[in-house]
Length: 458
Ligand SMILES: [Zn+2]
Image 1 (cartoon, rainbow, N blue to C red):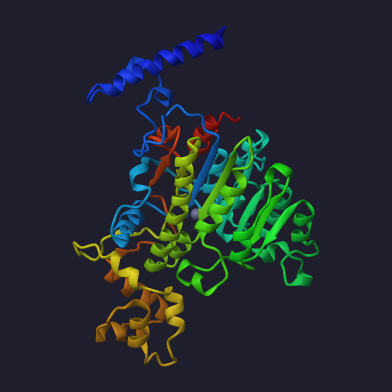
Image 2 (image 1 turned 135 degrees about the vertical axis):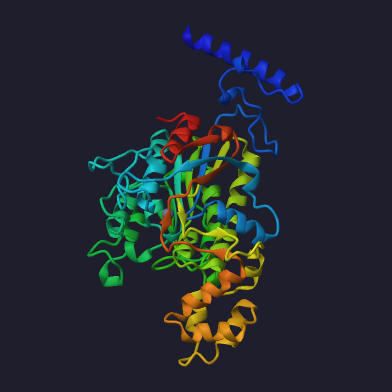
């Protein structure tokens, strides 16, 4: 009886919201009901159906270390809006249980479980109790699941969705838990964490790749194998892609390797997971935006953001076609305290970073011992002509790498205020059914709760 009444109220609400939509400049009346079903469309601006669709699939995309100044600089770098700009929904806070400024483990745990924990801790509360993650809840509901990252797949952010450890640095334990987790698709770096010491790996004895393949996972190790991967998750098969012993290569240098792009990994993950009739939950991390932020390396940050954007594009294209897929783009915290504009200049010049073809670390490694080739090396990797004072600054610096990155950042009018994370509020973007549920200002712990509600999982 109650149920029936609820449905009646819902349909009345929909009629009212239709009236609201047809009336110029008048939003839905306040008595039309809560915004989850009475809202004007799905808020994606691209019209992929209505806002009342159920959410079958969630693609949770995390550009690690990204924040509003990254978004501003990236727009300048790209020369036009980023794919997420149209889908901005809200802003959230990121502090952890024991620190004003979060690390990626506590942030990942908050974003995966809806609970605060201490920095360094993954999937456990401050007392050490296991917290269920949104991925695990989706699995329990019959959905397929996946993790994709450009770090080791055992790194803090992906680990927060499927493992429970006291110390994020215990990547061998995280690998053991991942193989036992039932996650259907895992793509990233970190092969060494799955192999025994006898094969050059970090596990004492266990060969987790062997275990995973025995459990029905196919192993792929380069982009060609990934492109040809063909597994059926409905038949209990899975896909394990480990494309490097450690982390994957920064996007600036990826073309020199056999590694797949983040977009290619995302596409294969979606293609594989969408076979599950009950839907899927996929987490995709652009891991190295954060590392570029720690390194204060503006070109690395922008190029890895570009790689992440292509992955978001894959997700949104799928969601547009599917109509029941919610795509959420939510960074975990700011890294580096990046600024959009610097040193009193009123210009923004991040577009010059398009000409940079290597990380600061790589550029510095090409200098000869007396650094007499600074001008040529910097010109060949950045397209920048240095002044004599700048050449001298790099030659005399304790760290040539830091000096190069600092000069490149200055020319791009990008400032850095830290080599660690900061406590800046973080923007969230969403596309697809229930996207408007992410509107407003809240705490990072609310993100998985909105997703659980949207998917109707507990
Ligand atoms: Zn992080």
